[in-house]
Length: 620
Image (cartoon, rainbow, N blue to C red; front, side):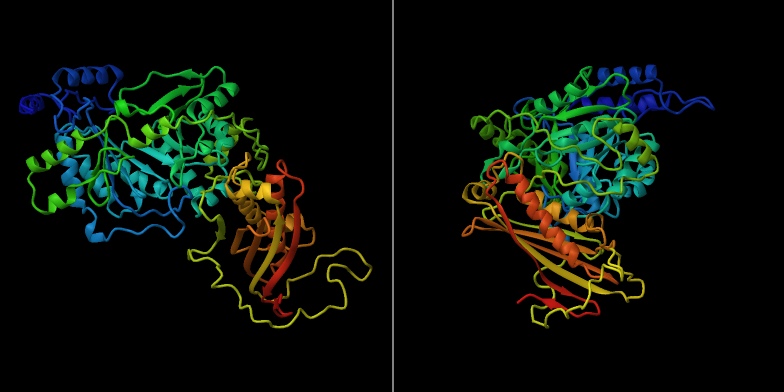
């Protein structure tokens, strides 16, 4: 620590003769008309200067294993504008009272303290950091801290295009954008919100403003998105992206679910089969990523091997939560409140002693990894050969990057929904799935409490003729142009009798194809939206809400399916509800047929419909 004042004095002397960067390294002013970006030779000279005049690293930020923590992640908020399936429940999580969260002044005070001790990189996280109203001001003030070289943000990208010009001007230098799928329909399913177009627009804006690379974080999960691996890689052909594939290990109940993890080696093998010329790039010091590049491609790919090949030994990261707790390990439960000490008037020296004690207690590796490796996971099989995803002639690995690049340039995306694919779902003691699609801005969705009343209102009045046949007996679509728009709701059901063997595998989520209940959910939602394309004389209905529920009935070894659809228009939605229930049932059959073909689909029926001139119907 004694050398630090000497270093500051040297910087002040240097400033008297030449302009300098925040580190104190000399830098000459550009001549008129020259680029303000430093030349490679100038950058090399500055780096050499920093190496020669660097002050000793803070003992407070060095742990007992000699790891120096120069990277600080600060959570600006617990809130998020998405509800990712693997991150939080649909209703959100209990939020810390605002009074207990760090104020802007407290965030900056802690950042200033850490930077003084040697932190040279700060990443702003959440929740979703870009929903914090003063995020631009925070970046601008962080940019003024002497010695801070990098200010980054990890964002879901929904608000990025709107805020990025201001953030860049304030001093934001690095961007990580979370994106787990390139399929719009799957995006809505994963995050339970719309916003795919906005994320694409944010990535496009980052490239436009010169960020290079733009890092895209993709959490890879078996049965959910591992079939898109090559599509993500192909994007780096024409775009300056660093697509970072992150190993994900779901923790089900009280044990690691190895079956659902896609390991780094498995992902790498998949990529190398398609691009055998893939080259490994040199690893940066303290980097968590193993980087690769395909010759001739603008961008690169990386693998974050947090599970299969952990990087605890070189970890240089510390985290401050939104409520001011210091976490020395993301996986650890140990936290110490810096907020409380700040508010009690602790001096910088007292805060440093508290921080140093916490850093000193940091373990060699996080406990979950120690436990996981003791359990000796079974060998993970190769990725199954799922049916190819097809949308408007986009095919994985076949000219995909050029097609997507064309779409991205106009901030457009494919509009036709994708066919259902195996998806990953959580495992609960009681398996119950509820999949929602709601186009209204109000997050409240149709539930058992808001469905039409079950009070019988009489059967549907009989008709003396078929409405879809003309006077000469030919098929004809009904003209609904003169009918008034009314609120229409329909509920349909179906039952799938699985048998005891298939039922047990579904109940325990042990099917090799993936989570059958979640796949059937998605298939039901997609089918409702596609009804007019499947049933020739059905009108195309703009659904405002679709809900698909699946429950397990152990007494019958059955899956009970209930589909609800809602729209406002001149025609009913009973066909949408029936199609949804039927396709969900067919999907359950498809997922389980390898185990047993003695599966019976039955009781596909309309439960109720409301709205329209012909009255309501409720099955008694």
